[in-house]
Length: 202
Length: 292
Image (cartoon, rainbow over all chains, first blue to last red; front, side, top):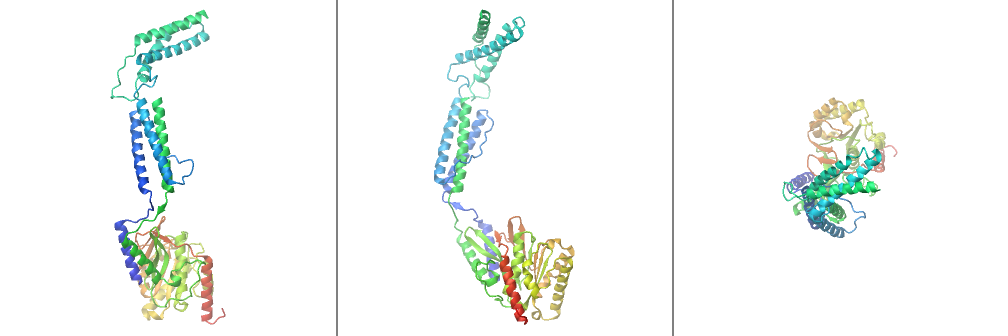
């Protein structure tokens, strides 16, 4: 063996490593399991982003959260990760199912839901009107007896457009809904009158 | 509302799963991959070749852990190579990195002595060669313009007259270069084997005048045949003829442009440097007749 042999062998090794790559990365016997887990996580990440777009949510933050306790058994950690992935899948399915019904009173029928919305707005309007009467007196706030039910009706009518529709749209055009305007107007006026009568009797 | 809550729960579960996957990857037991047969064979032969061409002081670790081999073990005329580090071609597959120097060429490092890797080379190479070559046929000149006291532990050989005074400024460097040029001129006139072999070690050269670089470049080609060799740290000039260039760009070290992962040896233990220099000084004093 001489210096020339060393130089020749060094050149051969450099060529070999250039051709076949340098095996610098230390491999683990769990590499297969970890790669499968990575694939599953990537798939779920794509699903979450797609679902966020469908539900019109802003893109979620998907950075990894380190476990509170240090991992001593990697196989158990992989199994736990799969359990969390399954739970995430189930939660995503629930989210999509909930998104097919309106957000407000999802289990009620459309008529009950809309009238509840009108009633809620009318009660709020009557409360605001009452506050106005207490501050400025009945004479100055007299016009409010006409304005309050009208405003409550208008606000409820618009809110039904948002909360009366399911979050998940079936098409790009908003779904047409019947908002029961006549019943709603009657409801708003009735609640306003009831509030006024209560006020006067009190 | 319920849809958003469920969606947020899905996101939370996903993030926890991703965290567990990362932790599992970190905790998974790792093992070294098998190298291809041919690579493994080459590495084994490289390790064998390095052991053969750098016996004794030329290739041993410069620590106090092992018994020192005898000084002056190499012949006075054979070409000598020195170890500068180790190459890790794969986990658990290492071999010493050696550089041909005496009788073959020069050694240039682009980093300067403020980089521990360059400091290691500048200290270990002359120390190994001084310890290996018989003292009567080998002279060393040292220059340190870096201001880091690179050769502070070599005082014993300087005092004993085995080297000239360590040059620490432009005047000292000029003196060494003049001696070097005179050595090459003598080699042209006389039989080369009549002259002692010389090693010139220059540290902190990036602080030197560009004319110094030009002078070194001018005589580098003729120097090898005149039995004169250079070890330079802080080299900013172009490619020197007959020279192994060691490049230290960031954490990567490449030797002679070969793309292999090289780890330069640590800086020699100061106790070992002082011990070898004291032994060399004693031996030299005995040779010239002074009491050791």
